[in-house]
Image (cartoon, rainbow, N blue to C red; front, top):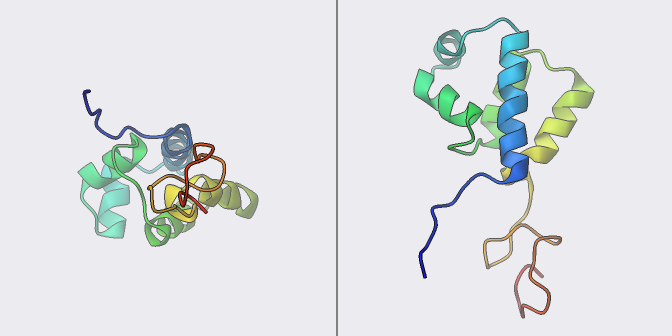
Length: 106
């Protein structure tokens, strides 16, 4: 059996796309976003491509910088993987648990 590297979920990819669109809408290049937040340009790029996740704190900083309206900000926070709890099996709960997996995602 070949183990595949972890790939971004649909939600993570959607969040990445939405964050990129918010940055473009704010008329900020990735390099300027990185400079303002004290990040590397590669961190901004990796977030926007879904290669890395984003912490709730970093997400809030981006939403504030991009001046994302409250309703859209709430939607984006729900997409963030860190906002979803995970069971011991590492899977988001409760909808992604394999049926009948004892102790997983309870």
